[in-house]
Image (tube, rainbow, N blue to C red; front, side):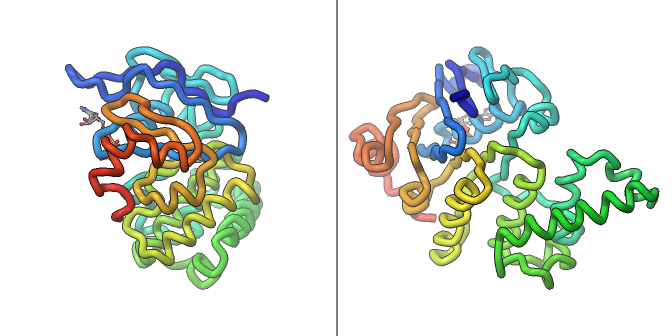
Amino acid sequence: MTVALAVEQVTKRFGGLVSISDLSIEVSPQEIVSVIGPNGAGKTTLFNIITGVYRPDSGRILVEGNDVTGLAPSTIATKGVARTFQNVRLFHNLTVIDNVMAAMYGRTHAGLVASALGLPRARREEARVREDAKELLSFFGSRLMGYRWEQPAYSLSYANRRRLEIARAMATGATILLLDEPAAGMNPKETHEITEVVARLRGERGHTIVIIEHDMHVVEGVSDRVVALDHGVKIAEGNYAAVATDPHVVESYLGRGTAGTK
Ligand SMILES: Nc1ncnc2c1ncn2[C@@H]1O[C@H](COP(=O)(O)OP(=O)(O)OP(=O)(O)O)[C@@H](O)[C@H]1O
């Protein structure tokens, strides 16, 4: 089976600092892989390299076997990779449904401009995209129900804004989702829900998922495999139990008491 996402011997330096060092990770289709590690370990840099924000100094990124290293972020997005951010990024003045539709327009024919001009074909397409957006939002059940669809994003609770960010990533049509700390800032109930959402993204929608997460309950709950980074180096990889008890991981990360506290 083709590997969904491959990070091959990637190194990234910023000046004298090696942020990612000779890192290799393979993610199978519909696998959920968590990336853990202390602040500054290189987790966000890894996402930035996969999505084309940064070009690695060496190494390659393969999506479904195709080399995407050095391609523009917008091009890599069309290859089926979408991400969410640690700090939520939405169109805050747009409604919930318009946020989702805007993400979908990247893959429709009419596009936003034609739609804004109200051309007939564009109107038909807009109606179809709106239905797709509603169907997609129904994935989040009562949390993003009908009465919320016309509310501006800024009026949503923090947890709902995070859900909407995931909805937007799904709306791009991506198969591979990179989720940057989806449970950050959430209370225990919301954290539990997010764990279920991540599992359902794979189970019901067939997504392949890479997740950066500090909350070890979430990591334990969702991961097929865990990769631990420290100073840009992979220090452990395996199932949750193996990585969470790995002496190097305990010493560099878990032992500091920084994990699972958010
Ligand atoms: N654009 C940049 N310029 C210079 N240094 C950078 C840049 N981006 C990241 N770094 C450095 O690379 C290292 C890894 O940072 P990164 O943000 O990837 O860590 P992280 O594991 O995501 O941390 P956190 O848990 O705090 O988000 C850090 O030392 C950081 O200062």
